[in-house]
Length: 304
Image 1 (cartoon, one colour):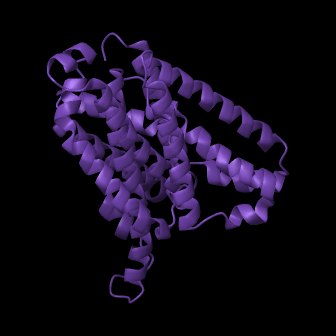
Image 2 (cartoon, helix red, strand yellow):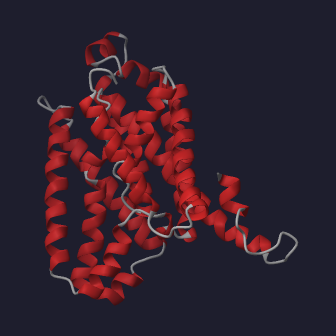
Image 3 (spheres, rainbow, N blue to C red):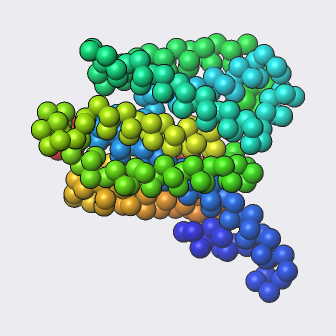
């Protein structure tokens, strides 16, 4: 699919000098697919491991809600002209830092102390996310139709939102976070056994959870700030990975999850643009299949 996205249906002949520039433009979109494939797949698998629940996703921590609130409030308070100018590396870094800080404050407050626990943190994350979404919806209802259209195009998760100028910042962050998470695979195998078994085997459960959540926050914030919200994409990839790789060892699950995630997103774009000759936001289709998969998992929880 990667090769097809780069060279298939290229209007310029191979021997033409313009062939390489066209391939380079398509390469930007391909890199923009690789980054969320790494971020969403690894972060979802790691998050489900530390929560010991294969139904919930990192979206519960409110990344998409905060992303939507940042852009909606920018349009609401400053207008379309400044909203369009709200781009570049500075805005990307600001969004990443804002999302990571929100999660760090959430972790530090709800995972420390005598009564700190993961379930309370998830509950507060859901409440904060719901509140931010309600605030964003209220502000969007007060926008002019033209402003609403501009904003809505930004809020849909799409590789078209990715700017190649973000790559020098995003790629090193993603590589470092992914390698740290991969190096922590053996500890995640132990954390998956539960808090009591984890402590008995000499692994600090609370430190492992906070350390993993920080890496998850970094990966999710980069993915969301780069291409926009992808709520069910990570869940779809993780579920397919669990079915394709019958193992609990994260050293094998992480690479498998990335491979499936990359296959899903590149395959969806290839079929939509080059097989069906359709134009639109591919993430809507991915989210639809992800939502259907979520319902299937809920209904068949005893067998999956």
